[in-house]
Length: 191
Image 1 (spheres, rainbow, N blue to C red):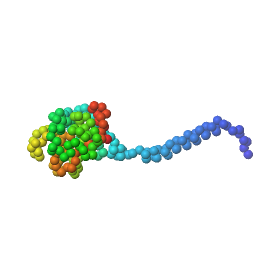
Image 2: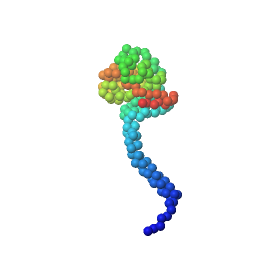
Image 3: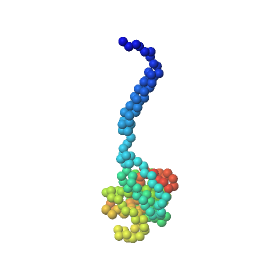
Image 4: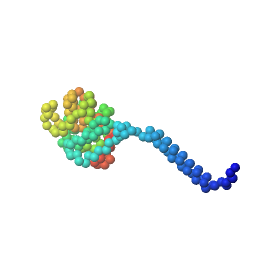
């Protein structure tokens, strides 16, 4: 029989602290996979995440294409000549006042934008989903002798003005305007 030694409170407290610390570390490592399950994947984030665009280098008439939610979005500066043409002759437009609800309320004006001179539209034709081509110059084109600038869809011949309103062709509606805000004068957040 061994003699009983007196209890050592410091040793007991040290063992209790080490055991508690190891238990806490184990709980943290066990919780990490559960916490990661709540975070969306990079693919899911990219599918719906807002896109920030710097427009400081755009000159009048120039267009840049960005991707948002897997589709092209056209961001461009409308020249003053094209802006004047937007409010001139609306008789050739199917929805001149953008009354159909495929854009936010702030886009129900001639320029279909938050700020005069900057336009943002989805780059997908409303007929069958082709991507229209941007032709800002006001000059005769093979598809229209009186071309006043805008978008032409080469798939089926839809014509849009420089603000994305449908002029003629099989497309039923204007090019949609995605939700966007100006972060500064030269930065836009789409989505």
